[in-house]
Image 1 (cartoon, rainbow, N blue to C red):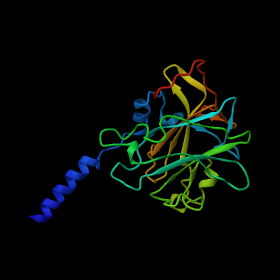
Image 2 (cartoon, rainbow, N blue to C red):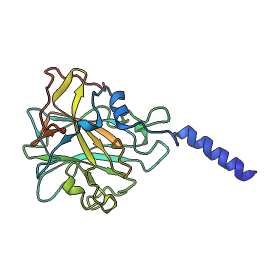
Image 3 (cartoon, helix red, strand yellow):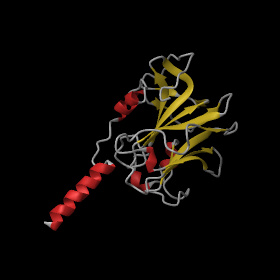
Image 4 (spheres, rainbow, N blue to C red):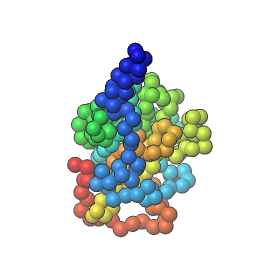
Amino acid sequence: MKRILAIVLMAMAAASFGFGQEEPPLEKVFQNLGLDLKPEDEIVVKGPAQGLFLKKDRLVEYMLIAKYSFGIQDATSIVRAGFYSQTTNILLRLLFECGPQAGDKTSLSGLPASPKGSCYFDPGKSPFGFYVQSANFNPSFSLEGETVCTQNSLNKKIRRFGDDIRKAHIYPYKTSSGIHPDWYVICWEFSTNNDNQDIITAIRGVELLTPIYGKKEKEPKTSEKPTVAMK
């Protein structure tokens, strides 16, 4: 009887913290964020420039727009996100850290308590990439630990992924009014279930190096007046 009661209490606690709550597929996440995207709209870039960006004529704006990795019940669900320059010695530059407060039992997506809104930074004139680290897989947030980067080539050292090294999926920032120039969406996967929505970030003020858009390999029509879907 005591064992049954304990199981019931665990189930009630799990429900109150969001355990068992089914995460939506990536396409549904896009819809919730007001993005007119499908998973197959991913931007394909190959070669040494893959996963790298250049700053345009403004400070780069970077923001977290959704987080579905772990739940508020997981004390170790802290995620760090930042950028690095393409240099011989990779130096990670932290932009923000988000914890369990970025999701709750009613909505696993949403802006975190810190930072409130956007981060702005100047990466300089050199090509740069983005990275994420999860405390679940890299408790010390060290470069030697698991660090998922926009460059597939930097993910080869993560043994747990095996040959599945594309863990940052880059998309155009597209709403009902079209694709917005110098905006991009990155869908991150730092686990192995490949739902590609552990966290989702948006970038403004950049361009991809040698982008190839989707399977047709043609640059899509852009919108002259960008709007922010998630604000």
